Image (cartoon, rainbow, N blue to C red; front, side):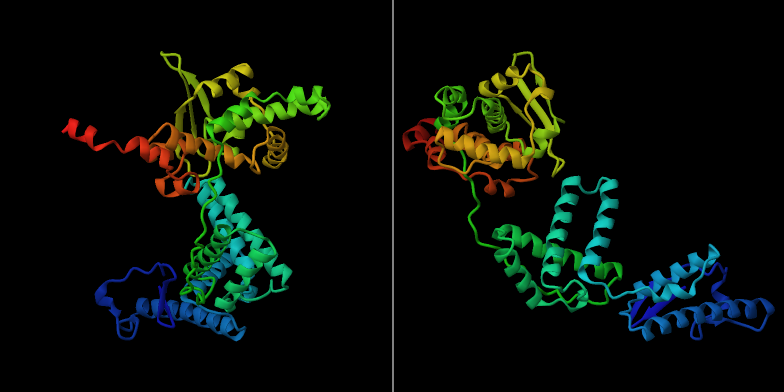
Length: 403
């Protein structure tokens, strides 16, 4: 049985009536003839049509924003309630004018199902939940949480953008992702029939022309960090002896990731492995939590030394929350006299710079070792330096000899 509403069509389901083409009157949408069977089937169709008409009338009277898909959903709810022996009259009075926060919640539930099917990662699910929470804070801050989603417009998007910049103090790239999330939820809601129109369909999220932060340690700075003696500071009375173990452990964790390029969540998950090949080289293999991509690399001597310092056992490598690590790294930068606001992200970017600019590894391979899906995201970690190009660009004399 097919429903048409405002030129939109939706299949309501089977009537469970077997009918030959010769028995059907297409122009009048009924069964031909006056047989008892034809009259019974026409009565059944009339009853179904009356149910649909009554449903639509009730929904329209209550001021709901209707689509063919939404009517289909309510019809199915009534049908299931009737089969279960429950009441059906109250079903049509469920609210169908959704604020954005409720649409975001429905979208999150849908994404959770996709995660269970392995279509998206837990990291993606968590990131989207964070976007939804930040946007919910915006609505609460401005007391607009009851605003219908269909009333959102370009002015709303600009106001949200300013809020994220001024109140939340987010960077341009992070703001851009929030705005794109709003568009994603609205597009999904329209496709699912939760809203009758998407007022943001034509809204264009402008890309922020900001230079990615690729702060990293140089080889000399990294070596100075590795060699630094925190115990000497304690002996001089500059720091408490009780803080030395924590400083050493975080230095080791940070330096280890400078040679592995792992994200904090991948490092702390301990789902990667370290194996020794026939040549005696240590190889680290894992899977990026966010992208699901496998990464692997050969560990250089400093990373091997750190691994062995903790008994060559992954379980012994020091692990703390990202916030606690970053807090400790700020003190480490101060003591080692590194001119940076150290964070766990800088370790990953240091690895990228070592691989691309010092070891001259191809960009595709660097992206693979970082667990990126493509080289497109590599610009957020590293840029080619003149030193790399100088080593790669040979002289004319060398080229002519090869020729």
